[in-house]
Image (spheres, rainbow, N blue to C red):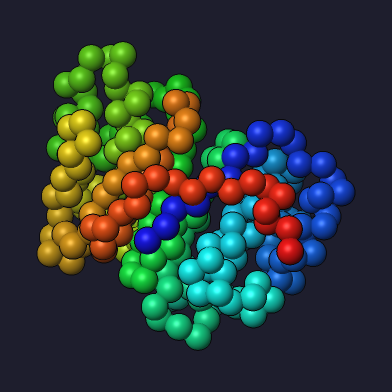
Length: 224
């Protein structure tokens, strides 16, 4: 298992964007073109190229031979093999990707002010109760801990929101993360990484053999 991250430390100039854009498939180019905000287009572009970088690192496949399909729930997968699993996420200045030989999900979120009542819509009763027992100064960080952990599980599972967010509970105390769920998803494991004090990054996988650190990739490395 490997985890890769790209930090978008400065705005990508249009010349670089255009050069990297032409490395995308026609389908992905169309998706990026439809994005109204340039920053969103950059993150989507970087996510696609980072996935190809990760797959190339794991399989030695040339980028032009990497082709994607989708499962019935819309989750992308690598065509031609069932032994490579990947997932990508982006938020703010970060784009991250996880890759393994079994199911994996990753989520990064920038911490921002939030009405804690939104947790009533997406957290289980046990998660909401735990959140509200914390001092108010600790709730925001914990909210994004649980949010990214839940998102990473849903993405690893591969069924998207067909798996309801309140159908399972995650309890976190320090680095100890416990999943309370039915047998169907109880097989997953979690790990969090600190890549930036303003962000939360959570990883979920069937394997419990997590890497010790995130591999940082420079934007220019994603040129081919």
